[in-house]
Length: 256
Image (cartoon, rainbow, N blue to C red; front, side, top):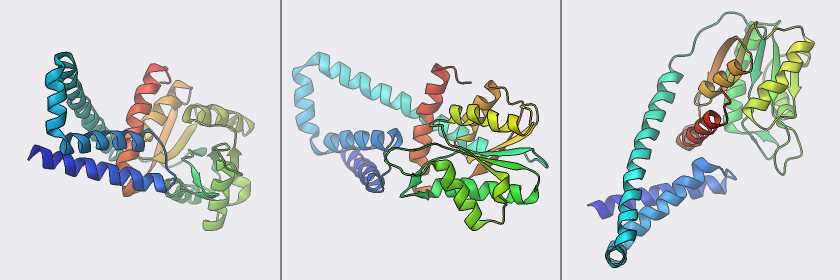
């Protein structure tokens, strides 16, 4: 039973990761499941051989057992983090009026907004349409092997799909991280005499908003409202896994 379970889980993780890699999506939330899937497959395919090797080397056997215990503890912490993200996504605070909407980038594909980025833009657009005096800031610089900045692709998408004036949409086109998105957006806000104490909305994926809001508050944004975009199911849990490590990294680097 254990062997079958390992084989099924390993195959599922590997197939999912390989499929996402064929879509040119490469990040830790995809590569780590691939590695775990390979380990599960090897453990399920060659249990006797692995056990014989471990029996010959007692220290290696103890290390192997410790690694499995650490894995289960890590998995528990990951599930708790997933539960936190899910709960937080249901707690979006309503708001009536903001002076700016900052849309955080999430990558482009072949010069077009990725499905995740489209979801963020689609979530932000209705608020912008309801508040014609609110400016919008598209954030995102030039990615690897890309010819257009992410912010320019975001602006083009809004102009093509929504009746929003180009004069209201500003580009922050230098950043490559959430922290830089928000730091560089300060200059645009200042140019429009918008204080960091003013009500400002941040639009991003549901899983990304807790960290984005915490970073914004650390940078001096005092009235932060959030606009949550649903994460496409096919990439959702890989994105949540990536966010798990980004959250830990941000804590270590004192980003919030």
